[in-house]
Length: 446
Image 1: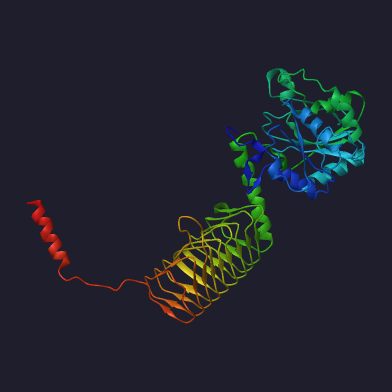
Image 2: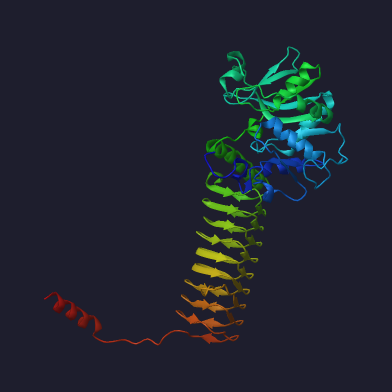
């Protein structure tokens, strides 16, 4: 990846890459999920509750990684590797192996793999696919009967023959094993290869050589099993994931005017009859209700209730709530604020750390000065307040229901309900000022 970030922690549509197969496994009904990490334990903080971590002490290949996972799988729930206690996991139960850099595999594909594996009675079943350009992938070598003979790696010249590299059916790195067969085969893996690693696909070779049945289930949609090895691969996979997210929302009644010009993260929720216009980005855990309008805006970790509208060129930051029918208009930025039902912030304003009541209308250029150099403070604006243009509310300050602020005011004290706040210097006109300034400039030039 040419990056300081571990590969599987690169973000894919708002979710670390490794969590895509983890979520798919949980959705498919996995009884126990173990994620393998390096000794640095970089993945520990991103795993959801109930998912366990196994540490692969040495970077000795995929076979070594699965060995670390088996040790954790055989430990009591919540115990570390090597605890030595039985976990109650059935030794014959199927074990599914997924790859953290093959993120788009879904629960349906996992279920189909398990169903095919159990139906055939095979010791191992792999997911494979056929690629026009199989470069870099392990090739699936089959017997004449159609069962799998072995998988050959192609990373280094000595790993495979020219004939084997012509095969277009490739190993996706996704398997279902009989638990007992996998446990018995792992200790027999050899590092006698170009990279000196324990290759998990060699388990298939060992099982087939011993007369056990090894099957391969071909996945027609290669997008489900695409691997990520660099930023180009990640961009390609992101495009597929984003298209699936768009399609899910549109089939549920959301209007996305131009999907090619719209970014929506995987966790975002959007209600029907909401329209998302082009050049909009919706990130994080944002939730948008029904009949909302989002135009050319950037939203992250915020909530829009039914009928709310944003933009064009709005920026809703984390903690923002737009209640039913509220509006954050053109070039409006809102952060950690609750904007009441029917309230309007039409344009050119910044509202941070504030509570705005129902049906209030804040004029252009409204600012909440929420930071005093030491800490953040909140502004409370009541219902039906009319804020004049270029009003600054210096927090902490409260404005009562139905109050009005004069244009250009800097409000530093609480405003009673129904009052008019005029907080600006009295205007003074100095006659002849411009002429005197010009005369001074001319004299200085001489």
